[in-house]
Length: 90
Image (cartoon, rainbow, N blue to C red; front, side):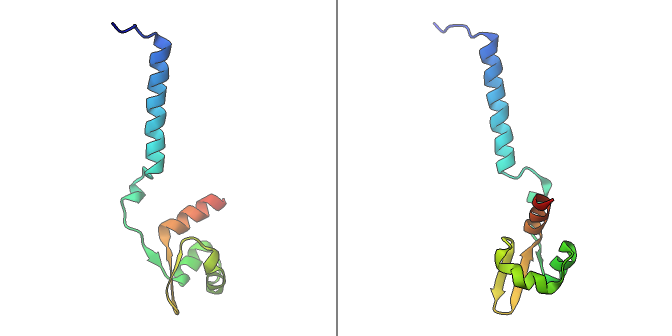
């Protein structure tokens, strides 16, 4: 025979479930933007969004986590990554 649970234990269990759900949502990027495909920007487009000149983008591309060098002469920047980076820097 199981022992009846007190209301406090039930409340703690409900809180645990809610916290697990919120953590899962946060880890999965629970936003509509996650469903949209990422857009790869040229250095010129990214420079306009970042309000810097294009030369700055090229000089700092190795330190930008959202930058990808496609070839020796081609650099692209993830729009989603750029937006997350800008939001974190504010």
